[in-house]
Length: 252
Image 1 (cartoon, rainbow, N blue to C red):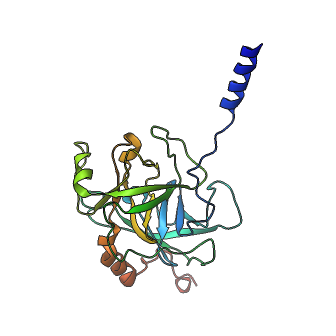
Image 2 (image 1 turned 135 degrees about the vertical axis):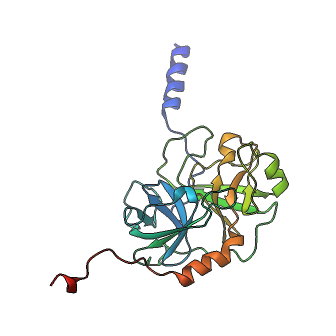
Image 3 (image 1 turned 90 degrees about the vertical axis):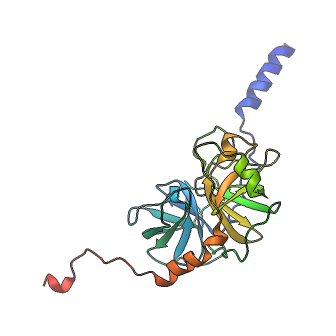
């Protein structure tokens, strides 16, 4: 009888979902943007622009950026769903050199307690510095299912040489990379546009999620402190693409 009760108790325990301590405090990352269709993240840097990785590049006019999200598949009343008007990829695209895309919103974001931009980096991250990574995706290695709630992990920045030593043969090092995470820390977030923030500044978007394949290996992020000039140049010089619609005066 005791064994039967023990088996039933263990079965019930196994059937109950365990609490996930990597779920972010709701709306604690007001700059986080969910790119619908791509199923990954970006970071809001002003009312018009979002920064993400090459992998997460959305399709203009057919994709939606959702701001003010926490549970990606539940309407909470805090969201702003804005069509994506244009994307500008850093060239050469997704080479060993760069993985960065800027996304232009069709209408400006409205700032409030749930939607707010993150400052660009005023300096580069330092080895040993503690940073915070957030995104929608599994934090368990080899688990690929979608995740509804925004996840947060804390990672230390790793020096470049240590990172290079962990690269598989098919990856090539670039000065535009920064690595973070160790085996004794949370080191996996399976969102191709995960956002890394250090000291309240935007320092990275995910490039390669190596920590999800082997927790001993740091994950790789685009080193955004090196791209500030390019980002500002894109924003300052942006000209909307010419419309293909026929002006009304030509049809009357």
